[in-house]
Length: 184
Image (cartoon, rainbow, N blue to C red):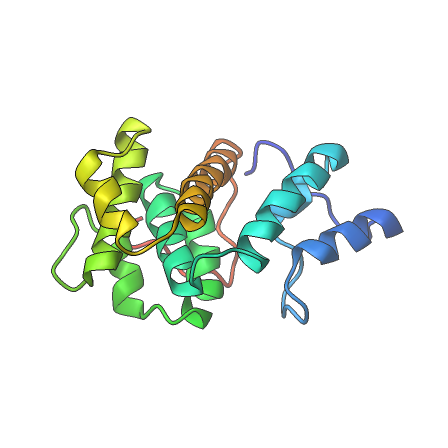
């Protein structure tokens, strides 16, 4: 049971409009429980929407790289809720395979990853463990990304760590259509 209950329909018109803005057009399911909980504080939800939507819809990182970072960040944080939502939707749309998604939850970085994918995974792991990047990891990233993309990568990782903290601390149950986090 969630620690804060998501809003249930019917929603007031302004809340319904706000919730629909958080969902992709034509989404086949109701607004996520996370979004419905956040709308218990509409001002906070509004501020969070700007960054979240900007990272997903207007980012500079290739979609597959973005989703790889999100999957690894949420897996490392043990956040089955957010990992499962992205694995079921945006990660697959971005081209990540089932095997790659499963590997994002592995404790080590295997040989199946390209150099730039391995650099992304190492970066997420280091940021998770130390809130910093080693010089070798930073150097590896700079061979694949420009300064603007590197800044976005850092913010993306921190943002999804924040989302993982929210979903975990709120004890949100997985969405019924989400992909289960391997090992959970």
